[in-house]
Length: 294
Image 1 (tube, helix red, strand yellow):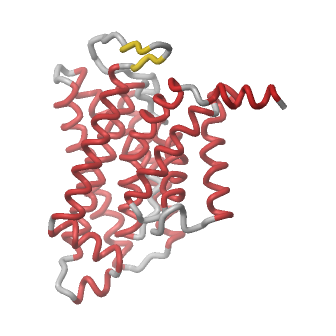
Image 2 (cartoon, one colour):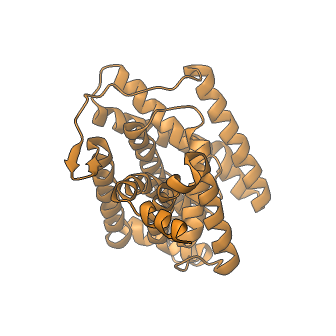
Image 3 (cartoon, one colour):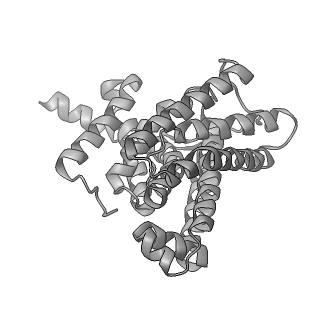
């Protein structure tokens, strides 16, 4: 018993918590995009993780071609937005016009995920890739080592979340997005241009998703299946926070990220996905609406 207690106390290591916040920052941006597409478009997009991978690879391609990392991430975001808009006009809009059911949309999104992943494998190969970044020493505070790029990731995520909040609360398009998410038919008869809202939803989602992929490349390697392995923690964060609630997705992402890192000393790194799955199952059984309402 005392051994278990001492082990649990060890798990609450500040280093693990800091690492969990960094991972949670990446999951938060990706989960916001995922919950926006569900809340506004009623689309459970299983290709979301692979769009994140696409953003990371476009960032890597631009960075290794000579651009600095910030310009590279911006170009990666532009490329991801274009890819999402192509999918919108070729797949999602025709399916909405035909009133396709949820099962059909999920199957299509899985097919799209496979298409993107295998396209990346075909173009870039299956090897792990690294950005061309200068090596920066970690900051040392006692036993806590704060890696420079993990700190950058957390700062970028906070800035993106603040900007998103201002867009949703203080702009016409943000208010229109909230109206469409609440009741699309009422929004349409009220004079809101729903197609314009859909367009902006994909643009915002593309930016957040690409930056999440680019930020992941700052603290880890870029690989073709990275998004597929992150899709489960993304969905866990969305369900934990309340489906369709971007603020809940942020809270859920940080909880998932920290819980995964704290589990490493007990379960090992190979069971991180299992931790996310366990949290998602427990929430679905105990509180299906999530910590916050959708």
